[in-house]
Length: 505
Image (tube, rainbow, N blue to C red):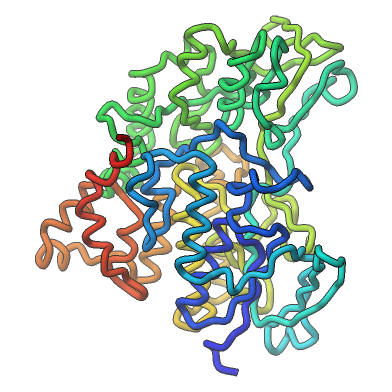
């Protein structure tokens, strides 16, 4: 069997899965995608489905924290007629458009659930896998052998529940996870406690304030609030240029921490709001919440901030500072952790601090690490999931097509150890499954030959060189050179400032 005729199983047809299918097709591989829903887009299209399991839902008021430009893939821009920030309906529609444009649906088997992924009898020799699936239309089981498996069903799989004394046994009201939030309509005159002030927690608190009697927002370690719209009127993810981001990698952390703090404090007095972060920007334990609405809700008293919870008894919540609140509804907005029940714990532990993944994609301890991989599993410290997932997918597809060779197991182990140590150093010894979005993506792109030569670009196309290094960092940059470059990438990169603010009138 030739390498390019490899049969690849892709699990999931959300954003990550679509990127994986597309990358496989680009490299001449033969992907078959299994999706348990009957549409693409995953959680972004979940308004089409009834709640059926523990997967998260999006709520009608949800707006992306990343601008339209960086939500899109590198060779299929989101329509310029759409607003700079998208609601969930736009993102779901974009996923449909992407799948239709590149013919990805032909590779997808909908209403099919993965039961197990196990090594085939020939694994020692071939590295192939047996994938058992259930047809949800008739509950029939079937097994098929694949040369490789790409797990691309995201990170929102297992709910994280905080350890709060009394919450589960002693609380007299209703408890919901943030992923189950539907809207504020049924919360009129309620006293709401939201535990966790990251993206979802902040959104829920602000949304509940429209109808609730009281809204309390509890944060254990504080947060940094960043606006969607910067002081220059641009989406905030478009104000950093490549030169700045590269410099930050090598400059002293105290310098970056100070500059970030000054930028955030210029808009919101975090100390006065009761949300001052315990961790500086360069510490991966810090939480950055992108919200234009939360500061106003706090300043106007519609959302009252609270510190860590000491205990809950009946309807009374007691905080570590001694204050108490009456609460009848709790939303636990503490997120999710990746979990894949169909994969052995020996291959991928549910405790991700024990996961051994080269570049967060390949389980390097396996005999054939290239034949099992993960797309979209990484929670970036900043930036969007789509660009990261696409870059991971391109990397994996190149490996599977034998255009890119993985290092030796010893070298992968060394890289993983160094990455882990760097992360632990950033957090003071606590593991968290997170990395810097730009640096991670740039490293993969460098490895794949997708980053232009500085001197060549400066000499042959100085206008593009200027925008590439001093303009916003956008996905189109990774289609300028290398395999599967896009003939419109240069034009899009040059005109990004016009594109960034289109679609508002």
